[in-house]
Image 1 (cartoon, rainbow, N blue to C red):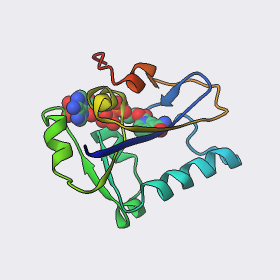
Image 2 (cartoon, rainbow, N blue to C red; image 1 turned 135 degrees about the vertical axis):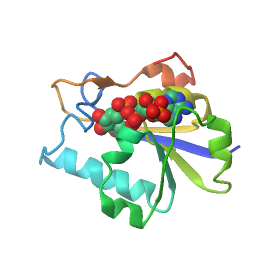
Image 3 (cartoon, rainbow, N blue to C red; image 1 turned 90 degrees about the horizontal axis):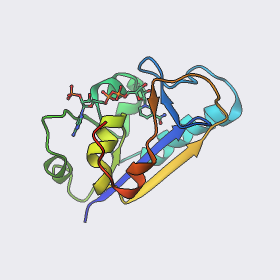
Length: 135
Ligand SMILES: NC(=O)c1ccc[n+]([C@@H]2O[C@H](COP(=O)([O-])OP(=O)(O)OC[C@H]3O[C@@H](n4cnc5c(N)ncnc54)[C@H](OP(=O)(O)O)[C@@H]3O)[C@@H](O)[C@H]2O)c1
């Protein structure tokens, strides 16, 4: 079984994204900065699969020490995962990607941040049970 994981940060009510970015983008408070740092530490050396919008939000420096691969809805998840044998694979979102890959994810790492503002993308707890529900 492939080592497929996921790591994300959510706001107080499951907020994930806003206008193609993190809803709290630019917030300088310690928890937010540490969360981003931790994401880059944990995914270092590994494969990060993500949808086009999420990939566009990844800074250039991140390509130096991890394999970042853009996935599309035309690519069957099982075949895509099989492209990276013996690697740790992180499923990087956004929501339709987590929905499609939920049943393959063995480990979730979720940080809840003290963000209470708006969002246009939300975490779906059904992903934790490997349920695919069409969003
Ligand atoms: N808080 C966090 O930890 C976190 C993490 C990641 C992303 N985000 C946020 O989420 C937002 C981006 O997510 P998004 O959903 O808008 O765009 P996205 O990242 O482009 O992901 C969705 C797209 O992925 C593609 N895709 C690839 N494989 C798929 C599959 N098997 N099934 C369905 N779709 C698949 C589809 O595009 P095609 O049909 O064109 O291929 C789909 O529209 C941003 O705001 C970003 O900041 C937050």
